[in-house]
Length: 245
Image (cartoon, rainbow, N blue to C red):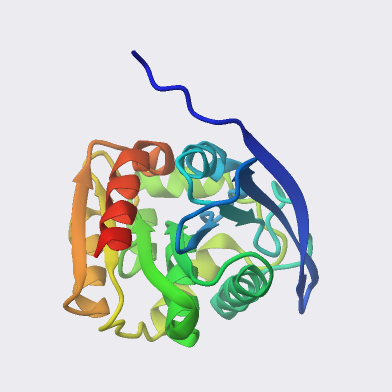
């Protein structure tokens, strides 16, 4: 028989930020969670928290409460404001992490898709005492590489007006100035997609090696945009392994 998962309840939340408020959703079931941590899920560039809804619903139904939010400057989200440099992504990620830790969770696992993976990494590095693990989905070194191809250029043209502030290409160029930290004491999962034309598996592996010796790499049959939904079972298994360690 197909298992029946408990209903998931969504609470609209507003997270204090330097930009005013980050627009967020907190996912949980009616029964109080018995898990030792909650999850902070972060979306990719030109997207919004809606892209993580399936993942958040799935993981919260399995007992792991989830917070999603919209990064500043993303027109598909509800936060508003303007995006000019990657440090704003790091700042938003830290603001969301500290809010979740202060209001809902003793510890947090940070999870980020594509650009959100940088937020997950940097927030964990800045607040390691609050973090139980880090997972990235289709996040790699030198993210601009995938957009220099003809297909990547077409994607940029298609989504050029999805950001308020700097142009997408200028924003991506700035990521190379970010110094990625090592996270030697944290469980790390880096997921790559075999059908990802934006971030190659080699870029994901390069990123994982930079983060430290505790990393795991999972390669899934997924495209870049489908990664959050295609990663659900893999993330759940990894979370249960962290919990039982």
